[in-house]
Image (cartoon, rainbow, N blue to C red; front, side, top):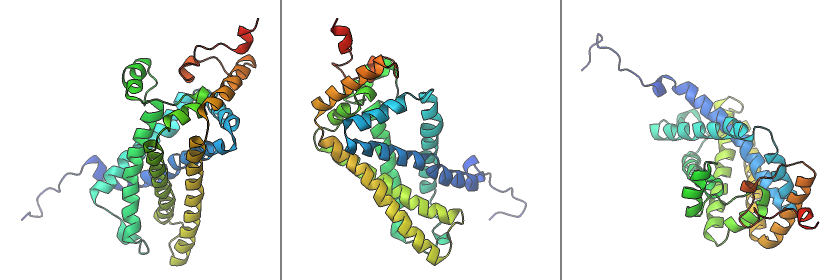
Length: 276
């Protein structure tokens, strides 16, 4: 039994900064991670409008200056922090459930489950479509031989259609999108309590309805893009993409980049160069 003179047990960095880490975790889940997820799913849903609509959106994204800096600063690093902090919070066993008198055990449990699913989904999704790293040696030696790094920005729809062949990958993406959607929508609701936005039972019920409707909207956008990909003819899509690529090259709105084009198209020259 310790005496009053015994020194207090030393705390780890995480324990000392528990409050701050939890607040930053909550905030990062909304901005920028949650905001990016909404933009990403809505952009993908533009595929419902046709190949040219989605391809134009992808061209616009990849014409942004310093795109890798933007991705790492506002997407990857905040996402990594949110994921690591979330796992630590879940593993620490401090549920905060007593603070939320109107939160059910199931809702809290599913927030943790979908968090783990979302982590595995995003980790695999980035590898499947982008290969994690845009390093030539890594892509050619590791990612592509494993059937990963399938997405080509300048052949966006056809490369996605190729990546989604079969039934396993579409099911995997559907589960992942739904898990991310629930995690974000329910996370917004709990963040509202954490930050003191809605604290009364009445305001929490209203927030529950609003967050549920938001989740349905974002989830529907994500699933609609999967349906659009599965119903797209990859060969026809590639013809449209290549024509758009040629037009943008001659208009000088993009620069030639074979690494952003699908295999078999990278060696093609614009039609105007062939017809002379």
